[in-house]
Length: 568
Image 1 (cartoon, rainbow, N blue to C red):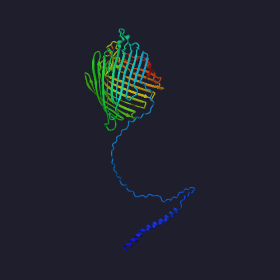
Image 2: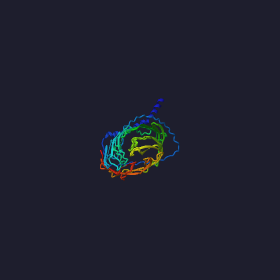
Image 3: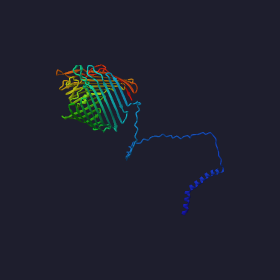
Image 4: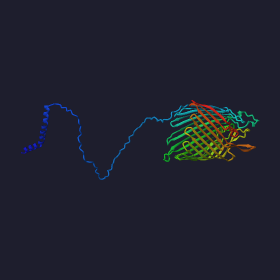
């Protein structure tokens, strides 16, 4: 009885599947029968009328259900950084160029030649390398002479000749330079009137003096612009000077130095610590004596740029090399304060130093000196100075300063009474206090006009001598130029000098003879015909003054010099 019950239950479970299969076969059968009976195509031609089924709109608006504010859970994350070493090897970039005006033709050489009254030939030549980032080299030759005479005075002809060559090489931020030069200066000691000495017949050759000098300069210095750079330099130069009367002087100068830039105060402002050394050595010989002497100087310094303040602090130590050698110490302090965005700078300081009076220095200042002279050390024991400088606009600047120095062994020129005609100068020394007030004003337009005015006023307090012999109490100058229509340049120079005193004797009594001041006005013009040719003219001493530059030494009166120039 159990088996029939199982079969009936099985049929009940399969009954829905059986009924579904029968119903599906009944639906498919008519279509299969129709497909078997006919096979034809029907083409319906009618206009196409597309329609869009109407959309069913949802009549519900969205709304936001606000929930209670809940703090966001804290976000925690960890970053595991890994350094990846990379090697970047960029190519050498080509430097960008700033467009500018097209460069004009450059010439290596320029020559000027002219002639003036007093039978004065003039020739000057410049030769120079063209623009280069690697080196610079050139040469210069100059000659000016005069065969003219000054009324009532002895032969006053002169000639000045200079030949020099120079060069500079730039080596990886450093520069190496040098210069060689030769000069020959001839003068006549014409400071007397032959008619006042009728009994004397002095040949021109006896009052003729010739100075010849051979010199050289060598220098090497670093040019490292880095803030912490170590810079250094060494200068080595010298000369050999000899005259017609067996006097000669050989001088050697060695000047090394080193400095280190640093930031000691952590304010990214420049400080510099350095040391300057110098050795000056002279070997002198004249018809009577042979004498060697020199000075060794060492100056450690500290330079601070604390914008707008700048301070230089140093201690100069000079050692005189002579029969009476000794040390001298000089504090050196210089301070500046920039005001009004550096338009106005106030400065002050103290200085000093030892120097050697040289035969070359004296003859360059006054060529009518004796050949046998005492050459002493001059000690600038203490000098204090201060002033104001600045720039009013981009085209006007100025500098006004005061100085006071206490000097031992100041050299002074006096007439040599050992000669009957007294046409030469000797040198004496005296201690002095020197006060100087000076000023400078410059105006420069952008292209066509410029003028510079300078003036200095001096006061001397002598220890033993009655006056500061042959030292003027004032000197001033004005230099100006004006460019008219780009091819015509006009210039003027005015030089003025105040009065000074000359030492003379009357019946063995010292007399301070006053010499008047003077003014010298000169005009010049140059017309550029084209890029290579030009013509020039210079008018000197337009006021036609026969003023005394040195005691008993008048200058030539009005003179003119004209010539041409050529660039090639």
